[in-house]
Length: 272
Ligand code: ADP
Image 1 (spheres, helix red, strand yellow):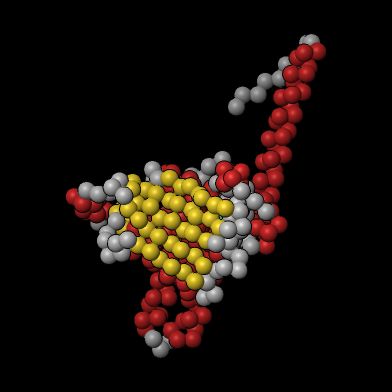
Image 2 (cartoon, rainbow, N blue to C red):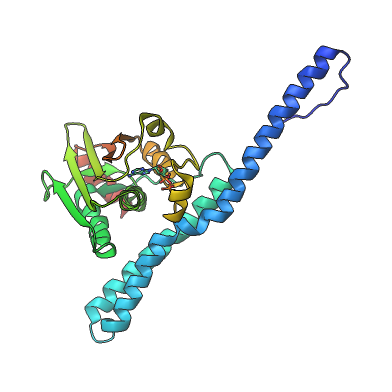
């Protein structure tokens, strides 16, 4: 923006100027702190995809040479994770530069039940100490929403990652998919730390972490939920949390459902 400086001519003007300069300094200070945090934390957000690729490579190393099915599955899963990492790095770079991520929202349709199950299965493999439950009212039913599949997966991964990170002794996570006339709702529930009402308002903000030290140990950087929120809202969805401190949290994501199947098929044709 335009910057003009004129020498103040009265005491009032001097004090106005000092207020402005101080506000500016506060902004710069916050900006520098966020940047520092960003540089420090980027690697953490990449942990999950790196761990998934590592897991697949280990599997390949052990069994993949003899088993072409494992070979093919692991290679394609690893490539998918690498694509995700590339996207993540780009989004983080954007985050560091702007107030908002420049997300490339794509006009695509995704089937909720099968996509949720796929992400869910990855977590079952990644965290064998946890008990995972997937409830879907109509598991075999195809529920379509207007969202780029990678983005849908990314939102789920952020919520499941958090559910794992902020669980305590009770390592149990419930995922559910439900449907109303107009909406599809995905819920991710844990029985861990939970949060206060005050924090419920704040956790979707950039770089916000309830417990800085603990979150850091767990690989947190305070970006996940802000990215999830931005993604969800970009696709006309909504995200909210219900939580009780020391008892656990439920994160809900909902999207308008594409109920008109003709619309779905038309979109599919366009996509092909
Ligand atoms: P982080 O990388 O720190 O997990 P997020 O943006 O994903 O960043 O989350 C912000 C903060 O919200 C976390 O640091 C944590 O304090 C809190 N939080 C997120 N998910 C949960 C959860 N399932 N249970 C309790 N607290 C959570």
